[in-house]
Image (cartoon, rainbow, N blue to C red; front, side, top):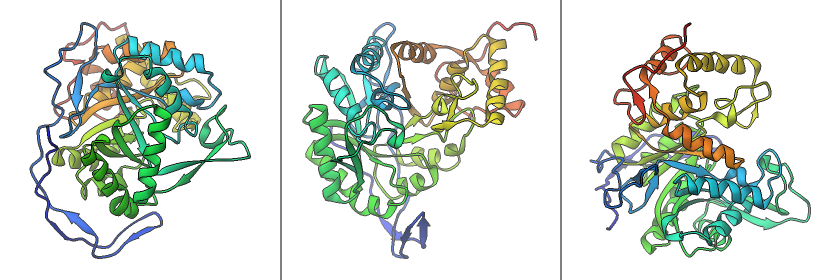
Length: 389
């Protein structure tokens, strides 16, 4: 099926600036158009018992499982990970029904892509959906990069930013080689925070060309900042976006402008960072929040959330994951795992039914944002068994 493309006409926008990138007054701004239906399920391939349903990305022909594996931990995030442990994570995720995998050159300077490619070479490759990213080139380095971007036990390479058309093509070609594939299902512009103008005028057109050539199936942008991402969504024809850390039990800022913009334009949302680097899975002292040690007040706050979850008999991580998946704009959640056990736990939390009353109590207590109207997925209107308060 061909990609649907709206009838876009443009008008002159006002001067806009993000970071170090300044946009002239003649920057293009898209007018409104009617989007296609959102979050269309894959109906011609039934979900196997205990499997994970698949949902379409925007207007592309790409369908992802609603639980995706984030492959950054496979490359030694925070501590070295050997090949066997990485393979065990992938095996456990595959056994649980996960068929969509998100990686990037930045994850362990290519190590994540290499390990994912090696694993998929031994699996039913046609059944797997692979997402990678562009905007960074890898070059050999004499000095080690251990600990760079939080990764350890990685090859001696370094990242070079390149959001030009040529850089995008070179980045994707190198990723395909590391993955051992001739195409990828999803390609995302990675963190163009201070390169928003270049992402709009060079990276995005390059991905459009690659999509038209059949080298990629769906295109989008992956960022940690909702404001710049919203600006880009309003000026492009993307299939999806990946937003990390901006929609969770601790922060619903992505729902203010980004999610409405995506719903209006038929752009699917892949939500990452649902555990905020771990604090919403296990709020122990020393837990991470957005890749850094969490401040004590945040640890205390999350432990109050966990106390409410305990009374409902709901694991904190299940509540965190189900809260994100319940938003009608969210197509899938991207969740990492550093061990096979964590991969199995992610699947269990994905299948866990959480009572809406739990989220209502958290919101009324000011501990979390409220569920949005139209919340769905595995939330139930009847309360689960509660322990005495």
